Amino acid sequence: MVTELKRLDAETTAPGLERAEVIQVYEEVFGGRRRRFPNNFFHGETGRARAAIITRYLLEEKLNIAVADIPRTIHKKLFYENGLTWMLGSCFDWSPYKAINNAYPNRFHKWQFNVKGMWQGPDRFKLAAEATRWMIEEVEGVAVNDIPSRISATTFGKHNLRGMLSVCFRGSFFRAIENAYPGRFHPWEFRNVPKNFWQGEQGLANARKATRWLCEEKLGVTRERVFQDVTYHLFREHGLGGMLTGCFSGSSIQALHNAYPDLMVPKHPKRKPRRRRTIETVKLTVR
Image (cartoon, rainbow, N blue to C red):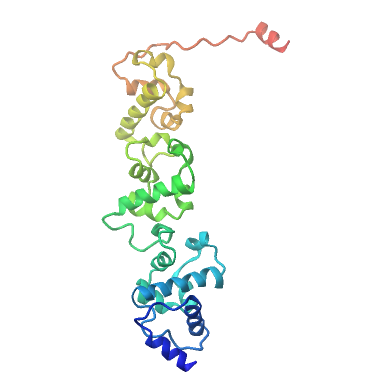
């Protein structure tokens, strides 16, 4: 055994050891039969290859962790508890993500591991856009057109991206969506608008834009017909009931007047006539 260990210590520039030999050395260190890894064992490209062998062996065989579950289960303490403190520090600057990326190249993203400081660098918004699109399109499998109805702040939390929202977007999931899909959506298309979105003068300006979007883009109603054709129920059907309540005391007429102040508000806007229910029509319905 002493002769074999001396041979490993001397093998600092030779090609990497066979997988079985690398694992044997690791088990000897972990089991206390050897005080430490051989000198320069994790040095250079050969050392990183050895680190990859040991990392995969530890996770997949020793701990039986499924590869897909790695981001949810890996942390520094796991390396410390399994005799790989020196490897993590000397090869990977104490970063579990770097160790995993070395063992599984390009298999995972750094945002899956909460890499310290990743949301504070100069490329943070580019990285946040990548993370947001990855979450929506790859993981959730949501079509871009369905984002407003299926994505919320809860979705970001589910995929461990609340830190990104907090640091990059002041907690607003809509700002994160806008960063990933610039100009594609409006805040009012989502279930929850940003805080105070309908408040004050800016709230009325937002309501003006939302009402015109509803009338002109979604419904295709001409300006001259908005008071006749756009009803309270159409506002609610398109997610603008909260706007009516917050800005206009529930009045669709006030919302339309806010959006089209140059149009005369009819005293009695013409709506589609409703059938009058009389005693005779009720009797006919019962029959």
